[in-house]
Length: 171
Image (cartoon, rainbow, N blue to C red; front, top):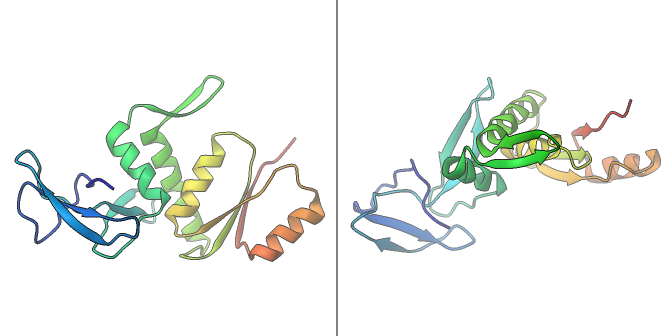
């Protein structure tokens, strides 16, 4: 994992970046004259009640989730395309912003860390928005095939204990 821009880590000399393993444990540090002191990464997307993104820095021993990957991609490549469908193009920054709004919506519905969020969408831009929004709210994504029959949907929802379902509405 590389250091996250904007996360200052106390206890590191200027020009030093902490190095962590996959479990978020600090395994050492790297020193280079061109580096500024940074934290080990983002803990993920946090969002206030308005849906505005607020990135929380990882602390020692914490583990990042996939929403931190989106946050880092938006920071590093904000203007680059992340999602394309026909003529629609969402940049990493736009995807992060939309996911933040979805996370705020889920939080307002009572979704919190560990709650299941079912996502039953086809391959459309709404899928990554719902997916990263659920992760940003602390939820666990339950991906579901949009072609499931009603009895199968009922089984998945009951078995997973999903609190919320994002579903495609066919006209």
